[in-house]
Image (cartoon, rainbow, N blue to C red; front, side, top):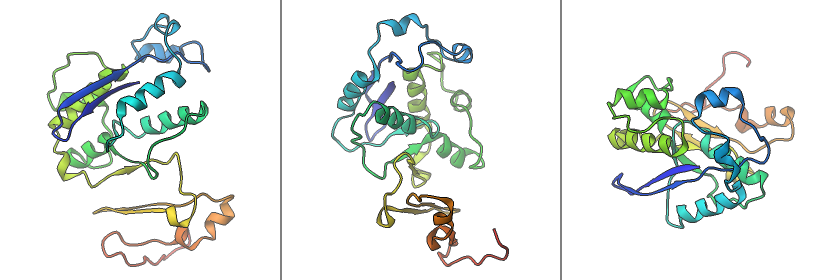
Amino acid sequence: IGAIKLNENKEEIGTFQEVIRPLVYHHFHRRLKEVVPLDESELAGARTFSRVIKDFLDWIGKEEFRFVTWGNLDVLELQRNMAYYKIPNPFPKPLFYFDLQKLYSLRYDDGKSRLALEEAAEAMKIEKTVPFHRALDDAYYTAEVMKYMDVESVKDYISVDYFRLPANREEEIYLTFDTYSKYVSREFKDKRGAMSDKMVLSLACPKCKLPVWKKIRW
């Protein structure tokens, strides 16, 4: 786990970094060795996830915060590991976060492309002082991109975590942005139940909020 803490002025006020000894897979996949500059010997004396995550949560603190990630997998994987090791999940539900990769595309590209972190850093002419693909190093470059970005113009395009889905109708999430809407329904036992739910089948215009009539069956 590697993370950098910024205050409301995008000033660095703390860092967290620790290598975690895996308990499920004991050896690096050959492809991983090509990407991650980490030696297996570093894992031998490392602590396990259950111990590290408690320190990480303490480091985050009790004050209001927002996760900022490059891509939409980090928050998901963090919670998957917490569930696997039976660590109580203290995060708010729903859990909203900033996917900076998406926000970068919305601000500087077509909104659909997803640049690699290194490509975005190069585009913003951020000096490469440390290598990529280590947890803290990638957190550093994510923070640097955020510092240079015009985040204010796209901050309303918040991302929502899908690891813990709504448990009932009252918890369902409906977000409306300028060009699209996002609906997160509760879980259904099977496809038949989902496809018989009026909310799941309905479509609304993100501009005027009125129902969209379907011309063809889908």
